[in-house]
Length: 382
Image 1: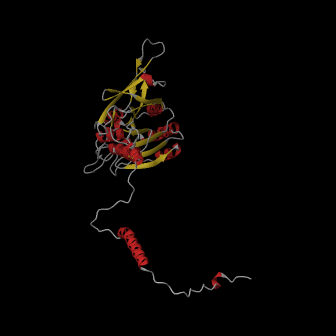
Image 2: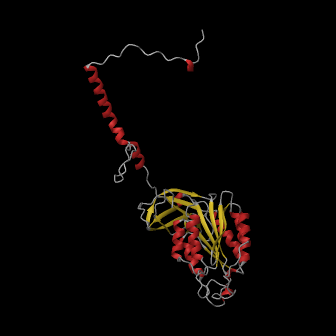
């Protein structure tokens, strides 16, 4: 016999036996049960009430365990200093095969123990090219475009990155990070001289680095170095360099040369300056851009190369920089002074090499930044 579907089932009939009233022991047990239930439910009910606005916030997070505390203790800031440098013999030739035993490092004249030392011929390079497009550069800009493009084509490898900035009365990013030298060349070819709306000619009359009367800006060289170091290279790691094509004259920057140097040092940027200037342009008004540019290049571990307005010298300058960037060393150490107090620390690298047939090792000329700022850097090397 088939049963009907469940929805059609008839509920069982209620018992017709009358319910028996519980005795006194049963009533007592029921009352005790109800009292216990009320006591147990009081705490969660109280917890569901909205807290008073004047109460301090209460955390529901579990108390930290011993493992959590141990993990917190292990979070330490390891302060490593990276010194990128080149070494040359007394003939000015690059020395490519140095070892850890050939070099020593001091910080504030205190010897340091090297954690790492290696040649970095093929380590990725981040390069910023800064192009002076003020009126004083009008006659030399075509040379810069020609040989600058060739340099980028030679020096940039697939794992490298470079960008191009022009500066005059403004600072403009002509090409952002790219590993394509032809993209950079096209951007460089589009660079134009900005004479600020004045007449081209003598500085001070709208054509040179000196602003016209009442003008707030002229050639923002120091600002360009400062902003490039902070905004473009400050967060990059590894080898970093700026190459500046300029006559070295600054007028109107909001920062001083010391600020520009400090920004480059904090970003661990090597600054090369190719001093290219049409001296005849100044017509006796005086030219002194070489002093400031020599200072900033020396203090950051780079070099100033004065080419005047000579195309062959400019081509040779780019070749020298390319050779140096491809024949670098890096020495890494943890300072004996481990305070991250923001102070400036003077550093020096000394290297010796024993030439073939020589009786004793030769002291080499080391090109390295002169110091760094002891600033906490999220475990990244300075």
